[in-house]
Length: 184
Image (cartoon, rainbow, N blue to C red):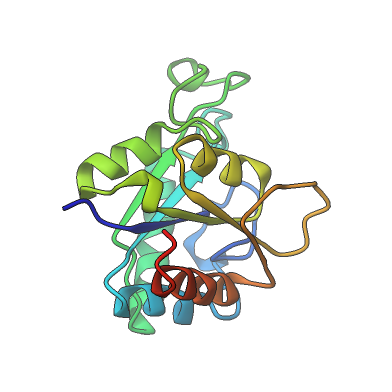
């Protein structure tokens, strides 16, 4: 049986956005982030981060830097009894300076490659999945695969999301309500 998952953007959704974050000590969880992830965990819903990390293509950080950041993020959440099931990141950008990453790819949001990879790895039904994020590319990616998008924060962009949440906890609570109402 195919399952439900929630894709989470990283920057300005779970953690404060620090441009091209490479220092794990700079991570600041946003209010409610741990509680939101724990709520998904407690309801047997996969919590999967999907993040564009063009800083790798731009030569501003490397894969080891990114891995260190994600390791610390997982630990910070675990310290609050919250678990991220997986992290998928796109290191590409067409304007990058690192040749192997300076490409158009299938994984940079709003493309759906990372969502499709997660669906395969976790047996997810993408049309029953959600994406919680702060940008048009997050919402567009989930809409391309038939899922629902939840916009967090106060974006100035006009974004057609199923729900506009004040923060990640509000978004996670809406997902649980939507699932309980039989809507995914």
